[in-house]
Length: 529
Image (cartoon, rainbow, N blue to C red; front, top):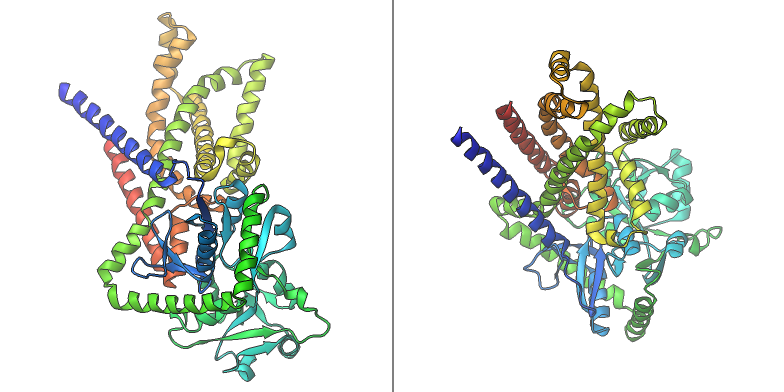
């Protein structure tokens, strides 16, 4: 008996240590320290070489981010000059698209850059500064018979494109979702939009597998892809689109690249605008020069990776990239299950007593609980989290930043857990053995005592095994929260795809992580039962 108690105490102690460790890691990731006023926090989307791409620590032209990764590119070089001229210390935060624009809106970052076009819609929501001209490019397969007359060419005109569409019926194209090409340009060019993807690597795969005729994107990015590991077998070719159509004004396809700043931060907007103007006056070809430097950096990075990285080092480096997202996902899943189950236990007596009552107040409480259960079951969790995010993030001051995104994800998860457990436990009341309950009443116990010592005990015996299953579901659902900018395993996998051009290994790794955690949970579950 004494040994059993010691074991139970030891298990509780280990569990508390794990919880404290996870929250300590979370504290470090979220970096609660106040940023000095001379810092400028730049958000970047690092999946578009040579404009902005992931680099390594051994490259002198790379910059360390707040997550410990390294980025480089012409956009980074430009902003480094701007920060230096403003006597600011540059801090870089890698984000995904379109989450980076939400980060500007929430003031998580001071400014955003990384192959993002200025549109009228974005101008309404944010201050924008044009820093470079956007050129449209196509990535095609060299064996595509529709473009046989353009093999080894560097340009294609709009009129030529119209003739190709007329000849072949349609030209199918892919691009990244939510980009200006996806939203507007594909339709303006009368291209048949097909299979837009989250990242460029998957877009390239669509072209490689002959599912689409071309990939449309920024020409510098497309051009570099044809000389990188995306084109190992020399399958692809880049074409720059030239506007020679008199009926189409140049402005119709003019979506300049921009720096995005929160509307309220007018001081930073004015400073950056002034610095950009001064830099361009002193060197009109500044962006061309920075792009050349970035291209050399990108090519050197690829050579270094091929020469230095052994298989073992590659595996270690890849696993390291998943650390932060693993801690965030695991902490979120554990916190949600604990808070959700506790909330369900608090609500359970109200649900039991109110569902059989004829009083108006108790009927109302029961209807509210039933409605909440129905909503959490009916509405997909991604819609719930986006609604909660948009409703709360702007109105509650302490929900700003990455911590705010984590809190919103946690609220949605534990509420879903709570109403799931509440629904299960309230149903189980109808299937409890009546003998012990009747005996308890016969012995003189009141309703509260019967609930505490008889009903609750039987319900917990039946429901506790389900906690393990719900924990596994929580882990998997954390992957959905990248939609509001929460770093998680899926987000890290997508980032690694952009670096390695490998669309299989990153997903195999996160699958192994999920399977390992799920297997561990199942082992613990069977030991308990």
